[in-house]
Length: 334
Ligand code: HEC
Ligand code: HEC
Ligand code: HEC
Ligand code: HEC
Ligand code: HEC
Ligand code: HEC
Ligand code: HEC
Ligand code: HEC
Ligand code: HEC
Ligand code: HEC
View 1 (cartoon, rainbow, N blue to C red):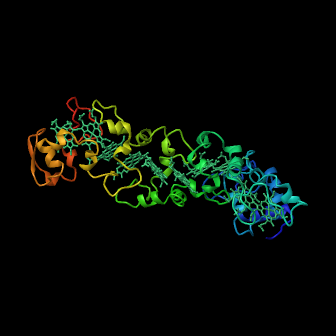
View 2: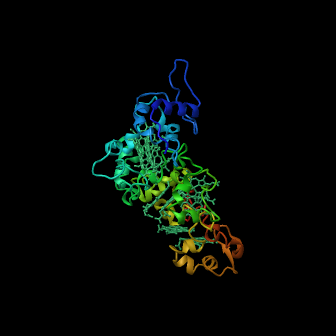
View 3: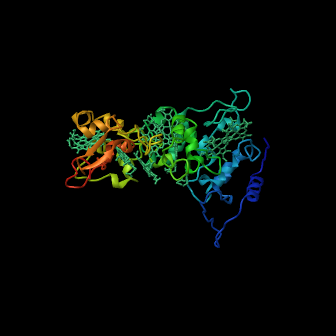
């Protein structure tokens, strides 16, 4: 570690790194576009940081000073954290502890290197002093909080680009822990997660939610309807499992049965419909397994070769599987 004892040198180093952006009146112009390096105007926060940056500088293995290229480095913003807002005052780390041989640890440590890592509640606690509420109202008791995650398990605050908040890279952050979902997104039918058009956070709020499975909305269906509005209805004739939960038939992350189906029809339907129509009606018998027989569609009086219908099976007649608005659509066939 290179020791720089003078705040002016730190400023000079930073000034060399940055492309200055001052308005005509000399005020800092906040430019929040990714990768923009912010000018380090020697304001209060930076002066305060000097108690730490005289030792922790750009020579560290992990880029410490690149925090000034992030939202946490907006020097004109009075709410901007100093090193000590997150790592604690760390008096003993700075001035020594007679009871500790060598350098005492700072108050809050986010990763295990030289010193042991702080508890998750403590690590998340410092972030929440400023970021409580809104999207994080349900952090307490959320599946991630309850399983010992802290904010920095997903967010890297010392890096110019936070992978968790970039749609192109977010999934990689999640996949470090969620391998099953990674496998799912490689199946034949998926949401466009692999192409960066969608991110996990389009459906989930990783900070906690009032819905099941960290759903962004209050329920699975509310979440699905936010994009697939046409499936919301209201329908004259609802199909009960659709109104209940889309995942009765669909799997959200990926399936080898298109489109995102849990099972192949007619088996998909047979899970719930094994009644007289399926087992006894002539067309039902054809659909339910005897794929070689020809069945007459009593709805249209047309002859269907059931083998060619096998792929869509029940939906060849019951086309309106999500619900029907036709006055005569009680059987979801129109
Ligand atoms: C006099 C030099 C000095 C000052 C001033 C200083 N540190 Fe340190 N700090 C160290 C040393 C030495 C280590 C041990 C690990 C290393 O070599 O990087 C360390 C470790 C750390 C670690 C843990 C990293 C790890 O490897 O485990 C953090 C976090 C940290 N310091 C934060 C701060 C903060 C915040 C301040 C200001 C309040 C500060 N330090 C001030 C010298 C200093
Ligand atoms: C917004 C909160 C925040 C601020 C402000 C902050 N840090 Fe950190 N610091 C973290 C987190 C979180 C980590 C863990 C690595 C990461 O997530 O980027 C960390 C890691 C470190 C480390 C250890 C490296 C490691 O791998 O764990 C040092 C040393 C450090 N910070 C020093 C500083 C210094 C010096 C400043 C002031 C210039 C500072 N930090 C400002 C949150 C903060
Ligand atoms: C002293 C207050 C303070 C602390 C402590 C703090 N932040 Fe921030 N944070 C801010 C401010 C101010 C901004 C920039 C303004 C904004 O976007 O709301 C910001 C921005 C962010 C953003 C980007 C927000 C966006 O909308 O793009 C993330 C992510 C973030 N902080 C995460 C963290 C994490 C993780 C920690 C703990 C390691 C932390 N913050 C600690 C004040 C703080
Ligand atoms: C499991 C991963 C994960 C954890 C843990 C996590 N975040 Fe996030 N965070 C994300 C993702 C993903 C986004 C982007 C969400 C989006 O684009 O809608 C985000 C966005 C943010 C933002 C900017 C947008 C907003 O909601 O205001 C802030 C600030 C933030 N997180 C703070 C925190 C804090 C503070 C904690 C700890 C209490 C935390 N995060 C814990 C994944 C996480
Ligand atoms: C289209 C919406 C949607 C998207 C996008 C999405 N999920 Fe999900 N996720 C769900 C639904 C709905 C459930 C609950 C039903 C289920 O488990 O099949 C769920 C469940 C989960 C579960 C819990 C699984 C279990 O067995 O309990 C994890 C973990 C998960 N998702 C992670 C992710 C990750 C990681 C991503 C990004 C790669 C992601 N999800 C993207 C909708 C989505
Ligand atoms: C550091 C590891 C880690 C990371 C990173 C992570 N998670 Fe998780 N996640 C967990 C753990 C642990 C659980 C709880 C046990 C479980 O259900 O697997 C969990 C649970 C979940 C659940 C299921 C909640 C339930 O009710 O069962 C969802 C959904 C989820 N995570 C989504 C995400 C998303 C989206 C991301 C990325 C933004 C993400 N996770 C990043 C560790 C992680
Ligand atoms: C953020 C928007 C969004 C949300 C939320 C969403 N979807 Fe999608 N969905 C899409 C997009 C985009 C496509 C791809 C459309 C295309 O390729 O033409 C898609 C495609 C689909 C498909 C067809 C897949 C195929 O192979 O053709 C199904 C089925 C589906 N979504 C079900 C769901 C379910 C169930 C939910 C709730 C768990 C959900 N979606 C939530 C955006 C979303
Ligand atoms: C009873 C089973 C079932 C339920 C429940 C269900 N679907 Fe479907 N869904 C299907 C079938 C079967 C297909 C394929 C239709 C076809 O090939 O004609 C499909 C196709 C889709 C498609 C792609 C084709 C299209 O019509 O746009 C989307 C998107 C979709 N479903 C969304 C949803 C949403 C959102 C929900 C919850 C509101 C839902 N589904 C509930 C069975 C179901
Ligand atoms: C999760 C269980 C479930 C699945 C899977 C399911 N259904 Fe249904 N379906 C129901 C329920 C419950 C009703 C309402 C029955 C009632 O009102 O008596 C219903 C009603 C119907 C009706 C209207 C006839 C009536 O008696 O009201 C048709 C037609 C139908 N389903 C066809 C299908 C087809 C085709 C599939 C496969 C794509 C399918 N269903 C998958 C549960 C299911
Ligand atoms: C060739 C067209 C056709 C096919 C294929 C078909 N159905 Fe039907 N279905 C009908 C007609 C017509 C009726 C109304 C006559 C009746 O009640 O027998 C009906 C009635 C129903 C009903 C409501 C009455 C009852 O018997 O419960 C359900 C549920 C149903 N079908 C489910 C299915 C399922 C599941 C499949 C696939 C295994 C399927 N249907 C395949 C034409 C078809």
